[in-house]
Length: 312
Image (cartoon, rainbow, N blue to C red; front, side, top):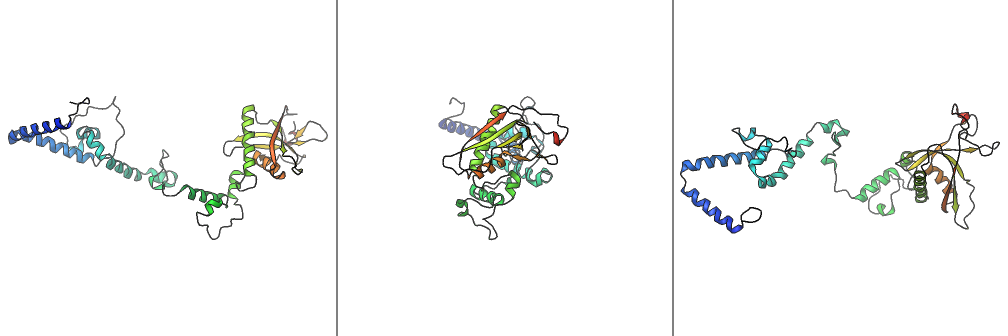
């Protein structure tokens, strides 16, 4: 015997020969009970092959795996599995999994949730998963629909619709994100936006904090007419990573005071750090090497009863 309790190859042959000799000496009456049991086991296996895979049993609540006098079609699945044996279960597992898939596709949840793309638990329908489309093709479709100007490498791989206007930026990405990856200086702007967001998190700055933003240019860079910007911090959006801010206008008659409105009839100008940084960096032709952020210690002059009182 081997360590696992199974017979070695030669031992198995000897055992089968012994069983064959004993079977040959048995009377038809003695054989009949074994034949009935074998036929029942076969019917259980055939019935099990028509059933879907069941969830793993809870051993604490699982009844004993003993068959009763019921026909195979009336037996619970866990009894059929116990009768069929582990080797047969492994053999038909793929066939039973196909039955699971058919039952899942026929379930009413597909027509109830998410336009038939997924069920109540968020599982994506198998027919909706396309493994043949390459990543490049997906990138091209996304770039074309959002930016209208895919990368040159993708343009060489995929045909462009004849009506495509590759020289113009689409408005979709600007409406969704407030920026477009095809804009000049995008990578530089995005890097500073991310750096600013990390600084706000590290310094634990709260909404309403007054900050002054300035950029340092490389030597010999042409002078910029775009001044430094002073803004009130607002809400941090995780996707895209940008703060909503409000411009702060200096009050000429009161040094050290800023207002959210330029005059009594005006309204606050809300924007994002991406737009603020883009305007400042574009005015400097992207020739910036570092950013300086001054955090002011500030307080509200009065309670926010009206727009004309939005001064700090």
